[in-house]
Length: 445
Image (cartoon, rainbow, N blue to C red; front, side, top):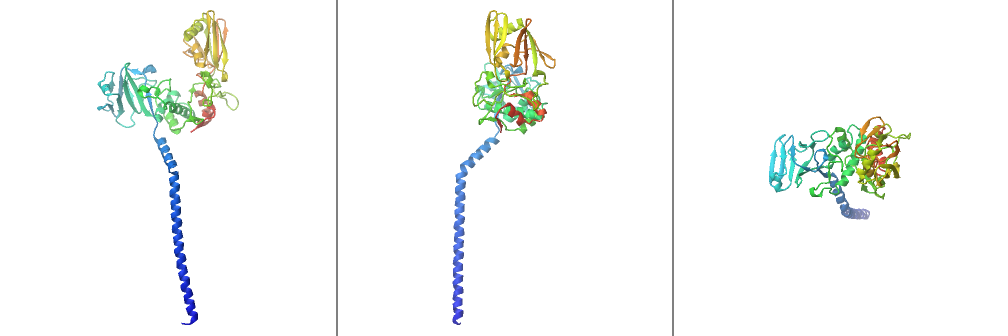
C-alpha cells in the first residue's frame, strides 16, 4: 500500500469516528430535550390541576338537579294541615316510615289519617313504584280537577293535622308552575320569559326554608308561586325545557323576578312597596311598555283601562273596615304621593269623624277594595269588586255622592306584565328582549 492510500484510509476512519460521536451526542440531546419537555408538561398540569378540579366540580354541580320541597295546601289553598290524604299511582305506590314498609298495587289507594300508626316511626314517605310515574292526590281538588304530581311526598304529623310536602327537581316543578301562572295558550316566547322568571324566583327560594319545621322551601299558593293548579301542557313544558337552567342575573346575583297580570302602559319601581332603592334592586325600575310607534302593546286589552263608580256610603264603610280606623262619613279621598310611572304611593281619606293615611300600593288597593261595587273594563265587561282594587295606577274624584275611580292595569305593576309579554311576543320579540325590557340591566344566563 503506497503512502497516499494510507493517508486516505486514516482520514476515512477519522471521519467515521467523528460521525459516530456526533450521532451519539445528537441522540443524547434529543433524549435530554424530551425529558425536559415532559417535566415541563407535568409541572404545567400540576399547576392547573386545582383549576381543572374546580371546573370538574362546578360541571358536576351544574349537572346535578336542583331539588325543591313544596308544602301542598288544602282545597282552595286555604290551610297547610290536612285531615285526610289519599294517594294512588298507575304503577303502584310504596309508603315507608322507619323500618315499616307498605306496598300498594296499580291504582290502589293509600289513605292516611293523622292517627295512622306509621307516624309513630317518624314521617311517612310516599313514592311511586315506577320511576317517573305521577302520584295522584285524590283527596285534593285544584283548578283542573284532581291533581297529580311528579316526584315523591313526605307527610308530617302535627297538632292541626298532616302536612304534605312534595319533593321534586326544580325543572319539573316549573312544568306545573308556568301553566298555573300564565295561560299555556300564550305565545311560546312569553311562556319562555315566564319560565325564566319562575325559575329565578324559585332558585332564590331554595336558598332558604320558608317552612323550616318541614324542611320546605315554598308552598303551592300565591304566597310564592302557584303550583299544580293547572294541568301540565306541552307548550309550557317546551318553554321550560328550551330555557333549562336559565335565570335572571343582576350585579352577580340571581334576581327575584316579580311579575303581574296587566300593565297600564308603564311599570313602577320597588318604592311602591315601601322598599328603599339600592344597588341590588335597581333592575326593578319604571319602564314604558310601548311599540316603536309609541303605542302601548296592551292598549287593546280589557284591563288596560277600567272604571269604578263607588257610592259614598260604600267607600266609607270599606275604608273604615280595611284600615280599622273610624273616620265617619267620607268627605274626600286624595292621592297625596305618587311614584314612578304614576302609581299611588299614599292616599288620605278624610271623614267627618277623622282621617286616615294609607301608604304603599298594596295597602292602598286593600283600603279601597272589598265587596259592594262593580268595575267596568274598557271592553264594556263588568265584574264585581274584589278584596283589592285592580291596581294603584288610578285617579279618584267625588261626583254627586259617588267616588269615581279611573284606573289602568291589573296587579302590583312591579316587574313583568304577563299580558305585556304576550303582546310583545306576538310582535316578534324574543323572550330575552321581553325580559330585558321589564328588568333593566339584567342578563339571562
